[in-house]
Image (cartoon, rainbow, N blue to C red):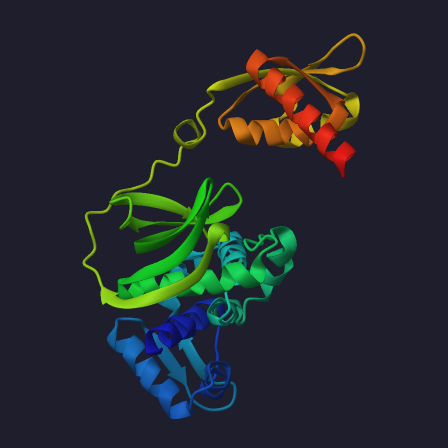
Length: 303
């Protein structure tokens, strides 16, 4: 697109003292005549560009405009590039890669900081997530209904949604949109969405409603847990809840205290520790774990 190319050319001119038209033509894969027209468009837009003829000549920005080069410092650019690389990790197109190349042209000072931050937003589901994100973005931009099969606790269902935007939160990707079945805005986890299809029907955007994604709203701590863990699993408690979630007892075990939201998730989490945890409270969770352990034992004995 011409706008992207103009931004890229301006970025090059802000980063370099001087550049030739043939260099720009090669970088942006267009003809020299197109570059000349782009330079003229930038001049009309108020950018003071000067062309120097002869040996050692080229295109540059007037000296009086050079203060704008400090608009983005090398550190600013490193942060921008880190963000673009993170988006590129979930993209099936080369848009972010091309934009990064435009921004890095002639800015060798930025290269040293490229590896200071690496963000991969795709996790274990790069192939599946990237294609879903591209499809959802298309549906959002074209304001078309999105249909998909959704796997939720309790049942599977086919949903038709008016997509609003994508959210990356709690190490996962989500879609925020108006659900036709629930007649309200809902959050859908991309990993649970399959058979995505963009409908032909176009919808009128509703009054925007921002999702409340606070931990207190999404994960209300309504189950108070107290348990003793073996010291071998200290790393898990630190990773998932932090060092302030437990205290070492006289026999070396770890007395854990914390709040949990979902009972089934809590039971699954506790069972994942096997015989390295002893639940003290609440009593009903302790009793249910005993029942599950007995049921597991009976199943294995019958197998």
